[in-house]
Amino acid sequence: KPMPTINWVLKETNYTRLCSSKKILTVNGLFPGPTLYVHKGDRLIVNVKNQGKYNVTIHWHGVKQPRNPWSDGPAYVTQCPIKPGANFSYEIILSSEEGTLWWHAHSDWSRATVYGPIIVYPKLGTTYPFPKPQAEFPIILGSWFKGDVMELIETALEQGGETNKSDALTINGQPGDKYNCSKQGTYKLTVDYGKTYLLRVINAIMNEEVFFGLAKHNLTVVGMDGAYIKPLKTDYIIITPGQTMDILFTANRSPSHYYMAARASAAVTYDNTTTTAIVKYSGNYTAPSTPTFPSLPDYEDIDAVTNFTRQIKALVDKDHPIDVPQEVETKLYITISVGTYPCPNDSCKGPDGSRLAASLNNVSFEEPDIDLLQAYYRGIGGVFETDFPSVPPRFFNFTADEMPDNVLIPLKGTKVKVLKFNSTVEIVFQGTNVQKAAENHPMHLHGYSFYVVGSGFGNFNNVTDPKSYNLVDPPEVNTVGVPKNGWAAIRFRADNPGVWFMHCHLERHSSWGMDTAIIVKNGTTRLTSMRRAPHHLNPC
Ligand code: C2O
Ligand code: CU
Image (cartoon, rainbow, N blue to C red):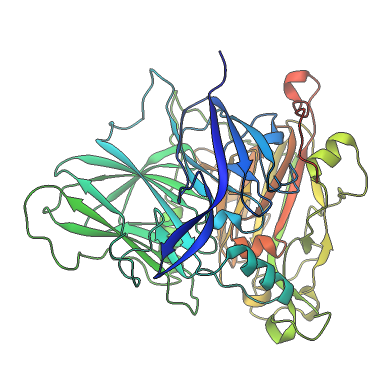
């Protein structure tokens, strides 16, 4: 039977937020974009026609796309962008994912307005591992910029300085009533007393991780990144860009209005960091003029972050088996830093007149002119190098307050790591204090989900730290928040051949070069090898 097909048109559409109107890039005129509803294991085609004015691509965040990197989407990694006037047909292949994922544009900063939920229901005839909720609501957290985002990032990269992180955070496209001119549009969700609801929370914010909560109500987190977790009761969550969480709550408080809110967790000199929506009980009562606000941890409350994340465990049972590699063949130890380059011309706006750069193992990723996948598939030389370092170029005290002088300047290059098909892999991401970047880094891998087997503060110790790994029920995710002055260890089996991007999901960091890719080689049979290239590839 033919695969379900959906048609999307990318176009500039007028939207008004924060008291002013501007044209933004949308899918079919919608902001946030349309929700894709699928079942576990489904396939579908999304035909994208670009009627906007920029080059764009679309990525299906958290969809593993077995053997099919051709439809993964990151610009210059798996495809050349869809030019204005051109089309591209994506085949989306779901496998083991179940829960909430999302899609977003994956070229320059176009994802600021081009994003939406992917809701993956259990296979027909099966059900959630928790009682069926009365209703489900996608809660997609985003960023709003007053100016044109593509111009913003272009200028920022030219000048080499910090970028504006955003002018507002949003819930389902709305800043909420703490912002000017935003009361009317505030997202509202109506509930009936005594019933239980499922919130599918997605962090599509460009540059900030946030605390999120609902005033007076307990939350039970039951899923993350398209996999179930052991039910976790909490007053708040911390959610970093790229992540999704499925959360149950019961409407069991006195009927009224309650704020749901997300607030940036990093200490930044910035005040537009709280977005609100309202949970509204049905029935007759006098609503307060200002609903109660959830109590969220303070800015930079590191303990609040770790207390929450350390409790997350995979749900493991006969319907939800997991397969954590107990031994690993390939180990990578990757430092994550924000550094600087000297200014070529005297007019840079980075620290002390430098240009900002970011790196993984001291390599700052340079976008190639043709996509890595095509270069790899066709054996085109000179596009990338396969010598991405497996360990940092040299060891120093990565998390010390004072850094050695010469660690700040990264190497530029398009370096990737090649992995044998089906090999078991461990990556330890090491946060550093280079340039005192006051942020955790959400590291995201395409084509895979992976197990977060451990994390901690300070420098990773390869003798003692592995002893504390959880190899029994670690959460299976596609994005891990690496503590800014600590480390996180992940494991996976390299069973999906292809070219897969790996990067920080803070958009500034990714733009500054905090990226690399893995190439997973083909196995020995057709079914363990990449699919052949589709007939129509975009020219670069
Ligand atoms: Cu959500 Cu490389 O992306
Ligand atoms: Cu980062």
